[in-house]
Length: 265
Image 1 (cartoon, one colour):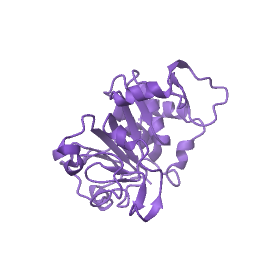
Image 2 (cartoon, one colour):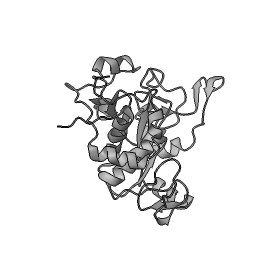
Image 3 (cartoon, rainbow, N blue to C red):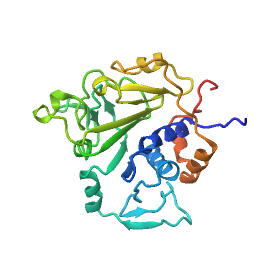
Image 4 (cartoon, rainbow, N blue to C red):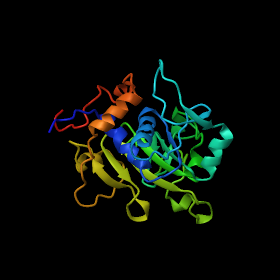
């Protein structure tokens, strides 16, 4: 069998695409480069029913490649103004794969400030659409650097999105649309399948150990038995990714563009 070479970026794209496998017809939104490529890969390989926009004002028949488009011509199939986008959002017909700065054991995330809100160490985007998104539709998360600054002990510094923390639910009631799905990092894949939606280890990227993940995480994660290895991309998936990213922008996400299988690095 011919050995397939793939990068860590390719591995994460393929792993993240699985988030949309069983969603049917929902609006797939990938924020930052790798989640966007993952959404596009999902539409072209495992869930053709996904709705996708050009990032401006049109629904598209096929995902638009990232970077300069050259001779590529977008294939619109509908109009996607803000009103239609928010109809999908508020109605639960959207699954966003986003990239927060922090996450805690409850799945609460932060994109606003690091440190005290009154006197932060760093100021970022503000809560933006995270509060509403988190209580109306499915959400998954990408972290390019899995460490204790991102996977924090206790709560995130500023709660921008709802999680499975009963103490913060209005009147103690779970938000109707709260549905957290997948977490993909440079070390592993996780979900919220532990007891009381605790974050659970799903798979380890090739060459990564459970001990490495535990050391890089500020809270205990659920580990059931011996976690499997994150599946390697197929030749067909790599060909689609190359078509979606013709200029190789994904190579800049991880320093040095490391291989996906770090057992041979």
